[in-house]
Image (cartoon, rainbow, N blue to C red):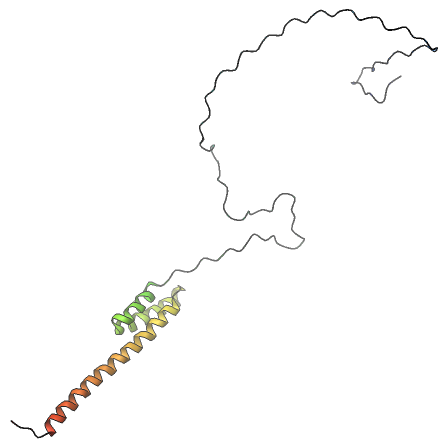
Length: 177
């Protein structure tokens, strides 16, 4: 007979408790014989003192530091809906470099406007050819260079006309010494 509630290791029959005889009275169990004390177990040696570990430990060989930004894989247990790519955040595209001649153009527009016209046209051609940024800066410098060149030409023409009128007025006045 086997006990299904108390499985035993393979090949052994589990112990069956004795069945009390029918009737009302049962003799008390005999007292157990005193058990001799077990021999003392060997005492393990006291642990040796170990100095505290330093606060910084160099990373193990082949250690890769954690990446900054958004993780490239979804967290465990998360699956994006079928047919939809997981969203990892917006990654801004790299901006093309600024054309240096466009910056020079805007500076020369205020200092020496004729040179600003020349550098402005060169900067626009370079921007078209290389795809650099700074097109608006080059156009602004070019427009300012044309405006300042025009103002300088008007000032020079006004200066010349002023002296021509002075000389003409002096000759028509009739004052002779």
